[in-house]
Image 1: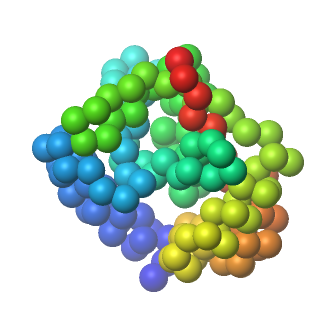
Image 2 (image 1 turned 60 degrees about the vertical axis):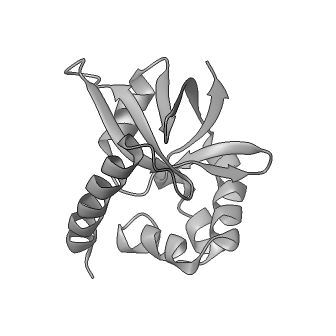
Image 3 (image 1 turned 60 degrees about the horizontal axis):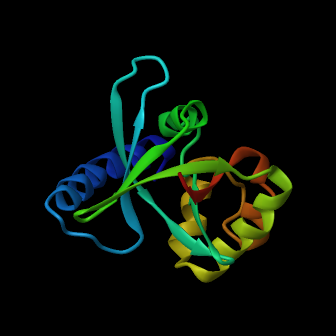
Length: 147
C-alpha cells in the first residue's frame, strides 16, 4: 500500500477511534489530543497513541507534515482525553539526539506494524529500530508533562 492509500485507511480508522473514545471506550495507547489551531484558533481533535517509554509518556509523529505537530508547537497546553477522563498537559518537543533511543525502544518493543508505519508514510527508510532511529530528524517526538 502506498502512503496515500495508507493515509486514507488511517483517516477512516481515526473516525472510528474518535467515535469510540467520545463514547467513553478507551483501548490500547489511544487518546484524543485536542489543541487550538495555530491559524484558525479553533479546537482540533486528533486520535493519537501515547506511549509509555523510558519512564515517561511520549507521542510520536506518524505522518509527514502532520497538522497536529505544527499546532502543538504553537500551543502552550493541550488536552488529552482517554475514555471519560481528560487532562490538560504540556507537550515538550524532544531534541533530535534524544529522539533516537526513544524511537529505537518504540520500534523494538512494539508490534512490527509500528516500524512499518514509519516506512509506509515515508518518514523512515527501514522498519528496524536502527532504521527508524536514523530518521529522528524527520520524526517529531513530544514528551507529555503536567501543565
